[in-house]
Amino acid sequence: MASCIFCKILAKQAPAKIIYEDESCIAFQDINPQAPVHLLVIPRKHFASVEEAEMDDLPLLGHLYRVAAKLAQEYKITDGYRMVVNTGVGAGQSVFHFHLHLLGGRSFRWPPG
Image (tube, rainbow, N blue to C red):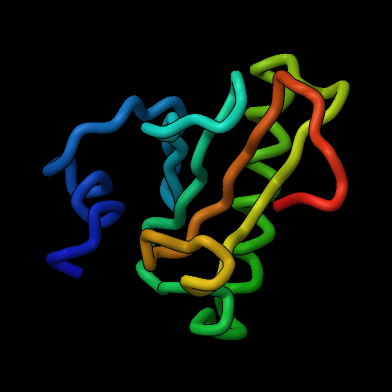
């Protein structure tokens, strides 16, 4: 996707502070952090949302959550963190490449938003 900023980050055509990479995904720091730790975990495969994911993508989606949990341990936020997926403009999605937000390092309220 030529216009997708996350695809450009994956192709090393746009800057990002990448903190994790493997054959399926990368993780990097959010440029507009909403918590002391705010990381994005994105698949290398482009799809806009979970609605566009195929059944064959289920292992990939699970892998993204496991990577986020590993990063929570590395960033020492295991006393409480949030994983968030925004789907659609009404939910606040602004980049239409599936991504998982990992937020921690502060207290969160419920309900969110």
